[in-house]
Image 1 (cartoon, helix red, strand yellow):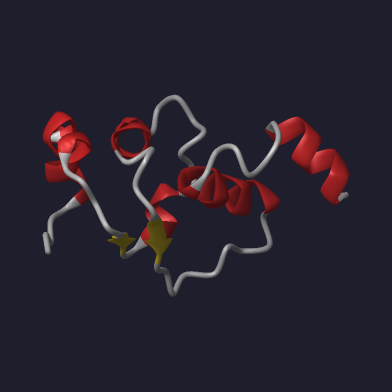
Image 2: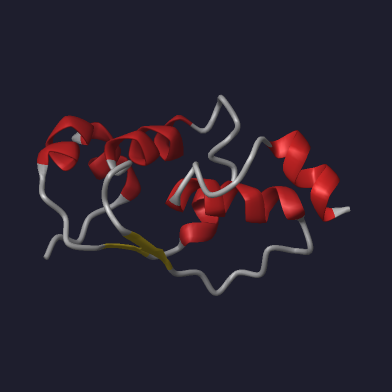
Length: 93
């Protein structure tokens, strides 16, 4: 078991990626909801480092009725589960 901050794990991305994770549980996952934005480097780094790891996201913060936030969190867990944002938005309208 490893408990760490987003910033520390992001800074150790190569080491995080090299570990054979059984499951990654991410608390305060709402902080990752903007992973699709280029300026969210921490979320993008973690997403890339954990691409092959099974993930569970925990958050008590509502998504504030935003499909874009939902898209961001789902794409963090499995980017292949959804199409592009444009196609997702059109199909969800």
